[in-house]
Length: 400
Image (cartoon, rainbow, N blue to C red; front, side, top):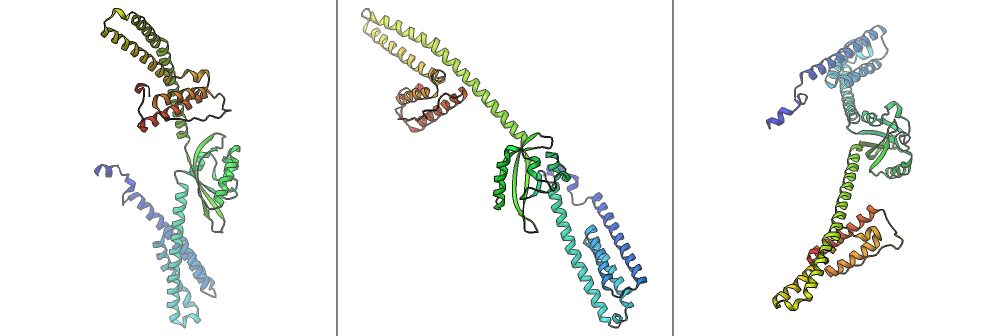
């Protein structure tokens, strides 16, 4: 736990002298500004002698609300007390019709204080909430844009400027799809707007365009929101995933290269087995057959061993040719995918005893070599898994 506490930034603590001192001086400056405003209003009204104290109270209330917005509720309460004192002791005594009614002075002062504190509290909360929402929007780690359903931009944040290159002045009032949407994706954009108009959220990985014309992959989350005037707006969040897409593309290229190298090695091994080892076994089988023709000079035990050796050589030759075919079917390159699959399935049925039916489109024709090999390997792996989990016995265990 000590390691975690040691890694905590110094700004996260409950007491930050620098920040607190800055906040105190800022509040004090706004407080003095408010007191100066009250003094100027008091000085002016004492010489002008207005007919009513109502406008003066409104001016005081304006100053208090300003201090509440800039310095906070505590400072505005102090300024409102000063304003109430000035209203009670500088203005109300100057009006005989109010002076004769002393209870009115106390009631008017209390009403003014209560109204001021309520208004300043509401203003302070609204200002704090708006400040928080502005900070969340502006400092969000992803690019944010608030747009109308017609595509016109209401606001963008600084991350949007960093990713796409457009400043807020260049985007506000313009249609977003005219700025960042490549022309070939207009239909996709319109389909997203139709979904949003039905108040449904849209999540998609799309391609967008920067100010300099370069393209990038982004993960966009668009959410419909209701504006104060009742209209529907769209809050869109963009996250740059170009590096991830490039890494995925590089991984796919690497996987393809590995598969091609693996297939080349399979082809080499298949040819060596077919051209060398299989030929040697065929020659061995022929020699054993020749020796078997003169079996009358051999003992009965030797004759049985010779017959068994000929049978084993023939069996090894058949299994070797099967393994060579499974490593790389020569028909795939010579005759195409349909012929190679047909022969492989026939051999699979003979080896495993599992009935298999394959349907290939008559107009399929020849496909690119990599595609044909991939399809063949997929079918081969599927049938192998079927045999492995079916519990069927294999007539030739080494080649199933």
